[in-house]
Length: 152
Ligand code: 4NP
Figure (cartoon, rainbow, N blue to C red):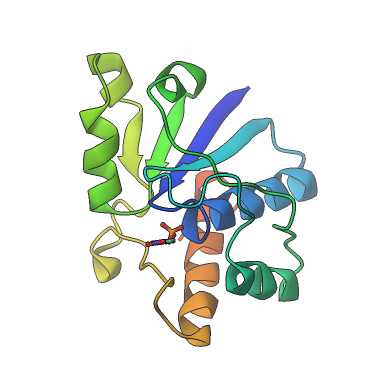
């Protein structure tokens, strides 16, 4: 079973959204995946996702309310097969913790190959309602693609 980890900065907006969407797709399509998320920072450890992220996802039938933030740590390189960073800063900070080439090779940008977003999921934290809406669909479509459900 493939184990995948999504990583952003605070683990309250983008990566728990990806985790919740992937869990949703897993139950809908019976996918053989293990899924988790984490943040490179420790600001929000133990907290539920941002209430705007939860509310927006809930409208689309994705329940994030039971997720809790945790910080990324080097042990995650052992525990996961694929580690997806939500932006380039997080990508760089994850790689800085990797001591082995095999660990570095597990890390990629979640939106790699999406030139219109310069390979980054925009952080909606300081944004508006429509930013949360846009990020939801951006993450949803990419998760479908990663799960092999849909080609972008
Ligand atoms: P996330 O968004 O990395 O998508 O969870 C953020 C959440 C919190 C903060 C920054 C980004 N913060 O500065 O507290």
